[in-house]
Amino acid sequence: KISVIIPTYNEERHILSTHQQVTAYLARQDYSWSVLVADDGSNDGTAELVRQLARDESDLALSHLITGVEKYLFDVHGY
Image 1: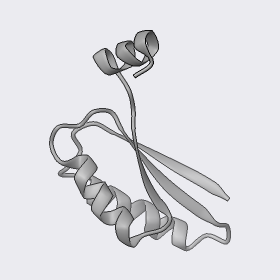
Image 2 (image 1 turned 90 degrees about the vertical axis):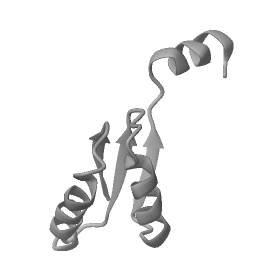
Image 3 (image 1 turned 180 degrees about the vertical axis):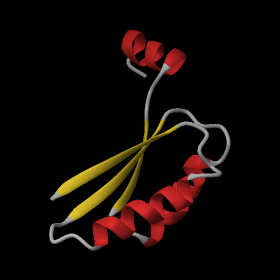
Image 4 (image 1 turned 135 degrees about the vertical axis):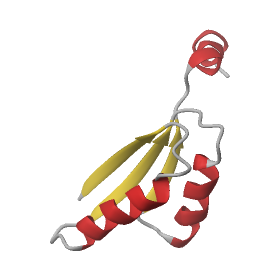
């Protein structure tokens, strides 16, 4: 099984077509696969679109990357 990671930051306008192209290619392959969208703090609705897609597609997942102040708080304070 392979996992394809799609990094995103404010990709609301492009994530649906990117997802369609990636999954169309993977669906033609002879191996199992999954897609992980790694969102880097988008504030444009990218994460919500991916969440909606993932409700219907078991091979799709969303991960939020921790950066900036959030990373500092996690590293220093554990939250």
